[in-house]
Length: 536
Image 1 (cartoon, one colour):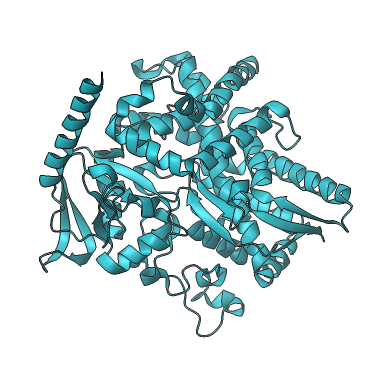
Image 2: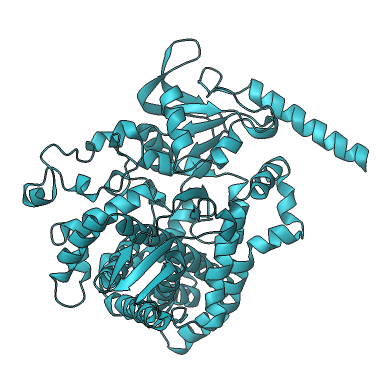
């Protein structure tokens, strides 16, 4: 047995050495001082706020290679905006999720739109689900979104009043925002009330188990496990407890999905426009010889419940924390949204000129706190990636296009791209919403005369408002409009009712399944974003 294992390990190592020698990245620069065992990957895994990647941008340029751990072939890191657009927009279907990440995506979010690969399959699936998230449909989600927003407000009001601490309470806000966004996606996509804000035990477990999985993903053990999976991808098929635990949330949702589908079928919703209606209609019609089976619907439910609640929840919680640390920004926001009587509509939110300060706060939070802080792709065929900014090669020549071979792993550090000081200035880490208002004469009251605005369009990415937060190209977030509507609706509801106060803690940000905050010195508490709230 040991002889067989040793033979397999030797063969794998030999294959990696051969691949490294064939690498097309030989002339590309690499950061200094890699670890013999971990290469640069441990530094990358432990990165906080994108600082390490940005240091490497300065050292090597916006496209460079890092030494992979355990002798794996070098990894390309791409921060160049033209290179990103080539990978994600112009040649998107040549760059798939890596063989390590795709099984993880399946375990976490099911076999839905995030997991699916291949141009034909992806386009077919996106065409099926995208109409549910059109502007008209999202506009009509107003009652459901505000029902949940008000329920969250009322729950926090009750907890503050019950605390007996002079109407003040410290909350881990990321727990509360997750409950609200889970309830919203249930109502607007599937006509199902998770009642998480109301503390329904079965559905509250979804957010709790997800948070624990996210915490596990930030540990050194998870990093080592990822390397092992890269070396031996067949491990994912073994009935190991740690691997099965990764699918706990998805399996919980699959069990609930049977009730969700039964509820949709019972209401005869085939003519509706929400996601469940579209899925049930496709199931009934067996369109174009490509049937949507009931089991496929379960996978769509898993995908949209997980991805549809956790991403918005994360950025919303970071926004509340940022407002607590910037009371003057918080007050300006409160004054603007309080000038509107009643609930603020989708059209108010969608037009940046109607509530410009709210719009600026939203964009700034999305820039600083992208839920997916890092992505990993792999080239499926040989290609040449153009660059906006040439990088100097090891031999001193300038490189303006990178040849890559099939199988090349590519890391895309979203948080570092969004915080790149060469693009966003020396205050790239600062929460400064007014940068989005500079140059707009009608908003000059918010800006200082010498204040720097956002970069020019050709310096930014091709995604939403020049940010990489929602990706870009044909795989850009399909629920983008819903995410922005619910984000703004919940935020305005809370900021009209509560004042957020800084608790004085400092955070460290790690990259689990999503961007995960921990309190410095109290990391053993897990994901935590403490904010003190008082009633206005």
